[in-house]
Length: 464
Image 1 (cartoon, helix red, strand yellow):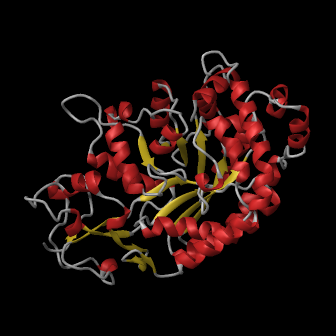
Image 2: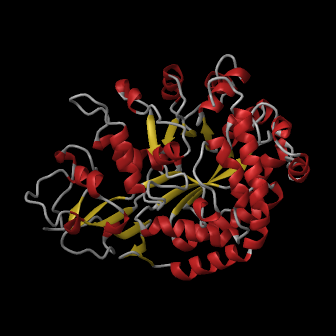
Image 3: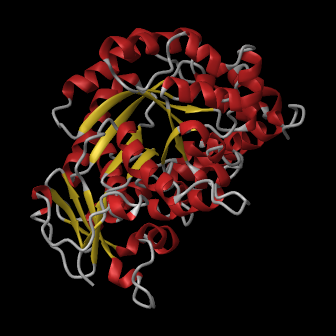
């Protein structure tokens, strides 16, 4: 089998370049072998840069709102090292770009932490979109903050938790911090974006200020939207006209916006997102693991449909940050039940490459992944099966053997060319384990907060 170059996976055969030995100039330095398949690198269009994965610090899957308190158990580690391991995991699987939604809520640390994250991406060699967190509503309970949970906590637990209620910086200070991060960025492969955590955690004044700043600076926005049923119920109460309609009225919706999850979006809201050129990032595994449901992706395919991308959201079906499996899960979940498949291979690869590139503001990226296609098809009786279908049926990280980003070979045969991944992981784990005594003391309090959260939302009619 000759080396194959698949520039438009999932499209009609006439649109492919196959069995071609003469590579375009930007691919000349790739080390290729017979049976290799080269295709545009997929983009992980929504993630949080978990070097220490959530299950490893005890955050067991649960309903989203009950799960969120467990993030308090995240160990204190060097943000550079945390990002280095997270981005390294992705690059080893052949992913050339990622959207990183940063987790810090301290505006005073944002510039330093943002710089550390950007340095990590540069050392790995991947493209990065850095979504800087913005919020001014507390995340304990959607309709009133920590006080809503007080009746469900013991006096001792409440007293201990009350001291951790954050004070959020003024809106202008938060936006200025984002601009400071952007001003410090000197890497052309990195794009800094506004990152409102979600409308349930932002005041109207903050959302309106972000919309204005996005227009003023031409800066993209990346935001969680309508992930869980409880968010749907609360936002319907807060915005009687509908949260998506409100966002449209303030100029928030535009091609500069990508929203993650969107599981609870209604048909009329999907139509409005389509009309405004917004991209939706689907996170099928995270939506299942945190009991949010399945996003209505396939329902929008008629009349052009909603531009959607794919993101891991720090999980993956096997908790392995494997975007290839995530693509397969989305393909299967959205296949429908009719004789004709609604969501096709073309849709999936378009989402993972073209739309993903738009989300990270790298629409014209020339990044390529090398796949050991010979190993994928070692037992095949016919060699004319559509390559995209083979990838969506069998591809996983272990078959990714090379990654080429902006002229740089980032990964070769599973090994990163820029860093020692195993050494970085060992150092990160050592830092995390050094923080374990503090976390052990926190675990009962976090358990109490999760239990109070479950008890509180169980009082919401029809959503227990």
